[in-house]
Length: 376
Figure 1 (cartoon, rainbow, N blue to C red):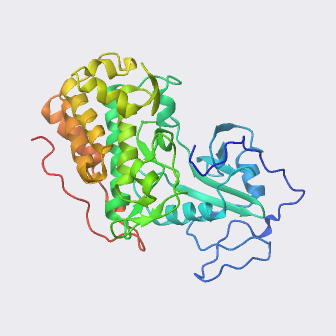
Figure 2 (figure 1 turned 180 degrees about the horizontal axis):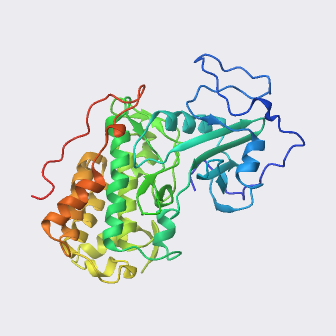
Figure 3 (figure 1 turned 90 degrees about the vertical axis):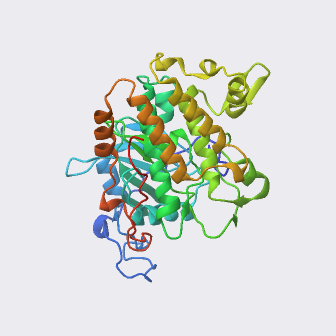
């Protein structure tokens, strides 16, 4: 859990006797209109559909199918009138994530658009009832897929997921104006579509960033939290890089950030460093990968992950990470595919579209970096 989230089990709001549906699903157009509407709900200037609590009950069939739980609250599967499946995240009374983080997430997701960032469908702020409505991810999150709760992922699939997640973070860091720092990168916040396409989620802690650092309250998840940030309260762009490095180590090893070693509990970075220093990469690999991989590709990703978790000055930025992960993916794909198949697969799957550029208010309109030839 994030450090600023209560560890008490979430409790769901009791359903009030009336819902006030007469003015639902509308958002004020005026940028300065933050007053209450006639229905008693605050009008919020967001370019997303606003749902009433009564509508959420219909969408979720009275919150019948719970699909997850987190620091914000419980998550339910729902279905819109047009047949679109959605995930409805409802804030619990015990959650320490308050209205500010809710507004932050809605505001950020209303303005940023990238194929590797989860899409916000709408939100609910109806009296005491607060909820976020997202597109539904059929394959859940990366953490569940790595911990044996579902069909194991191959090394190629893991690399694709890492590469796509890195592209989403690169967009936040490099393409948004001002740049955005996620602050809670972890495998449970990387969601997967039916085709295992990765989308970074959970934007409640996102912080706009300019300059070299910003002093801020320390938030994040133990095991993923940048030690420099934890010690100094100085948030830097590469705080996300540290967290992503831990994600890469999880992808390679299948282990959680705090794992069991010979001397007891240790951080995953220590576990990997000790073994790689002896050239023993096989000892860190997730056995669920079944021995099917290009070993050079795994070495490259493991070394990249350790650089990501090094001291801040030695960490790569997200653009470098994207480029290196692409090289590793090409190595792995070349194990079973021809050069033309590799080039065609990556260019078709990962070609950036115009909609991946910045939106008004956040997007500068420039094209994303060109990383050169696909095969060198």
